[in-house]
Image 1: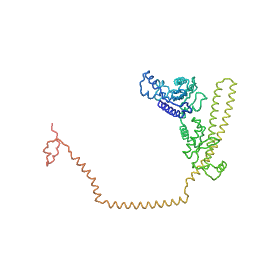
Image 2 (image 1 turned 120 degrees about the vertical axis):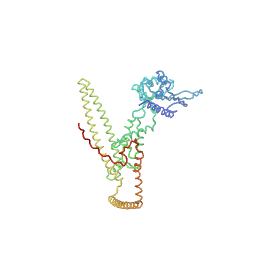
Image 3 (image 1 turned 135 degrees about the vertical axis):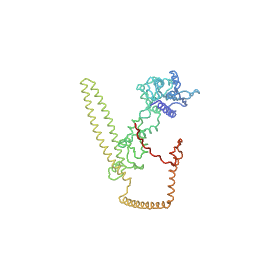
Image 4 (image 1 turned 90 degrees about the vertical axis):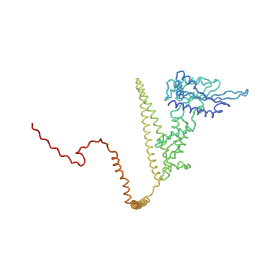
Length: 479
């Protein structure tokens, strides 16, 4: 996460809060007249940068400014014509501004908010101790463990903490366990449609798990930190878009799984006995059989996944006990720990045996589903019979022979036409088009003769003169 992501989260939170505040007027928030203000800490940021001699406009634009939205609720008393403030709702963003100015970089988001920073910020927002305050503070970088347990010692203050969740969306918690659940929903900037879309995206991203099993609404709701009803709505939304995905209940739990593509007009008036009878009959609708078996496989896979989680917990407990046994030097304590480890290992073996049985059952169902899918696909394809294939092959062969004969005839006609159109005289002229290239090249070679200096011509070299006789060798003179 970088500073741009922090600013984006800040904008998303405040925009959602403005919508929620408008819906809560007169219901969750007391008052008959309202005034909404928008504030930030831009002046504090500028003075901090000037104090440390950092005059960088880029740093100023990329640093979060801790913006907030403040909603004041007023009523008109009967005994005078003014107005009385009866409630304040504040949605504020808290980021470590000092860290961004002194140590931060544009590609960094900053450390989580501590309890000291949180309580100081709450005190700065507390306007009137006689008026109830509902304060929701969002930290885009999260909170430290001590900040999540901090309690403001101020009267008429209800504090709600908001931070981004790892699986998407927001994590909203109250400062105490008895905070009204409606306040938790008030400071959740993500609306219902956004949660449903997030569930649908999660199901589509985990489509590979639907091939051999399924997903339950309870497990998805726990993973995405959304209500189970929202997860069920997301399942139904995905199932409406993909005809092969089906959402059905098994043992009171809504499951989504991949089955046979079936039409929407299904008969729901069939009783459970008739469904089971049709399921195990030799003839019937293969699509319904595939869907029923896929639902059972999804239920078994969910049970197997839960047992895998239990085995993981047992293995973790075993590792902790082994570590305790190594550190403890008392023989009595070691015997007690050894007995616990032995019992845990037996439980792990039993759970592994159960998961192996579940894997075998899932494999049997997957094999039956595969065979039924092949049967259904063969029926849907409506392949031609052997007689039709033979008859069509003969017709195709005859058509190819006729086409080849026509092609040969057309080729002979083309040859005769070309002989008629191109005469010998035309061919000779076409050759003349290429011949001038050689004489032209020769002319260019003789166009620029090499100039040589004039030399005197000897009498012997004159034209018409006879060639000179060869000179005889001289005899050596006498000494």
